Each structure stands twice: as structure tokens, then as C-alpha cells.
Image 1 (cartoon, rainbow, N blue to C red):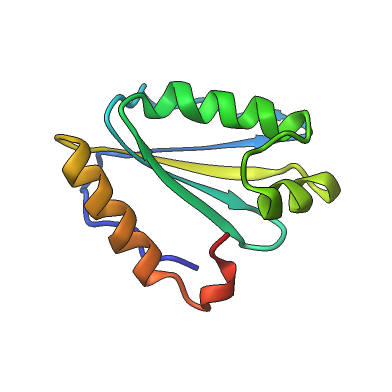
Image 2: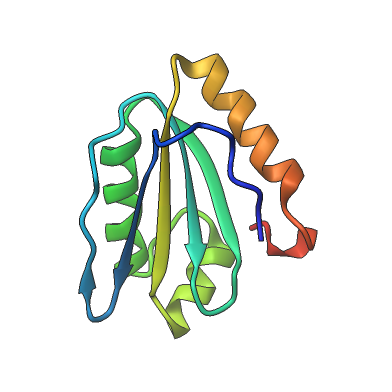
Length: 113
């Protein structure tokens, strides 16, 4: 479980499951993202200048058992269903701050991969 940043309505939440892919509300450029493994609640958090594009790449890697985070990849071998949160920010510094804010809010800490 993590505490979502206070960003008002500026976020895109969607899912990618074996049954199909959800739809983004909008494309996110600079910002941060959270990938939540639905069945376990484990999280993978990052930031990027091209969030939506990078999340698409991570989903493809997850689908092919090639995700850069080996722990998250191991979870996906059993169940590939993930929920995705994409948050736009005004710059890379703000995105990095948001990653810290999110990771510090994760309880219990073992959910953070």
C-alpha cells in the first residue's frame, strides 16, 4: 500500500492484465510512475522524462520476462496483472521528489521492489 501524492486530478491510472490492456486517460511526459503487482501489492516506482513511453517499454519487458527489476520480473512470471499509476510533474527534480515521497509512504516496506 502506498499513499498517492496530492496531485489533484492530474494522474493516469490504468491496468495491464492477461485479459487485456486498459486505456490511459492521457500521455505523461516528465513525471513518475508506479507499477503495482495486483495479486501481491508489490510496487516498482520510477521517474522519467517520457513516462508513458517508458511504462510501455517496461510492460513489454515484463511480458517477455525481461523486466530490469528481477524481483518484479519473478512475480510477473506467476501473474502478469499490474495496475499502473502515471503522474505528470513540472520537471525532473519534482519527479525525483515524488518518487521519494511515494517510496517513503510504502507500508509495509517489503512491498517496495
